[in-house]
Length: 261
Image 1 (cartoon, rainbow, N blue to C red):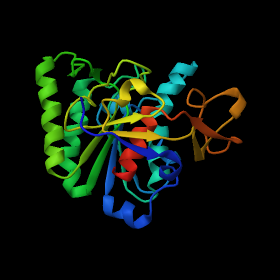
Image 2: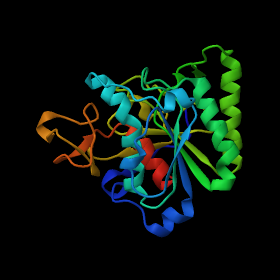
Image 3: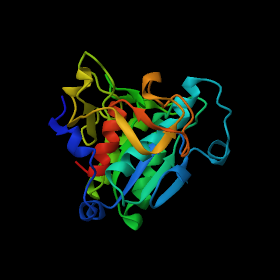
């Protein structure tokens, strides 16, 4: 069981934070598999964690599932920017859009980058909207490395960041029942973020956010609201309709990190 559940009203959260509050918070590191940083306003720095071959690849997207993976990081960065208009963002590409997976090994590399660079860049929060292992056992995915070693590396990185005043926010998971939580949200020093629409992960969350469907002020889609949500279709700046995604625990995590709850 995690420690504290605090319900945030989505209509207030989505309005954004005052510039003074955002400035005091500092920079935010966002860990994901892909970013189109040219679509994100404000100070943005892309960081390649996964290796140059992965970060420089230009995937040919063939279906809705591949678009959804490809768009995820960009939409998370957009959610954070909408709720914090001035914080510098460090977008850490830690995995590959071919699988849409960030392993525990990749997560530990990203967290250790933050440890090494947080002080110099005033990073005060980390946002991770992925599952990187087995939340029920609280163990990471660890290809090629002993699971306990990867877990200890992640736990130690999170503890070091906490000691530096950097909060690590992670999605609890979109579970409808069962009181489940994803990895690394299960780690005690991680701020587990739930969304009120997913009752199965609320009980083990530290922060629970409630709100409507997220509608981007900047990202656009050719899809209309009647045709469905837009993370599975191309994202542009010129199409006629705003990108909309549900209030998932991924979106809630971005909001929590942006407002440093």
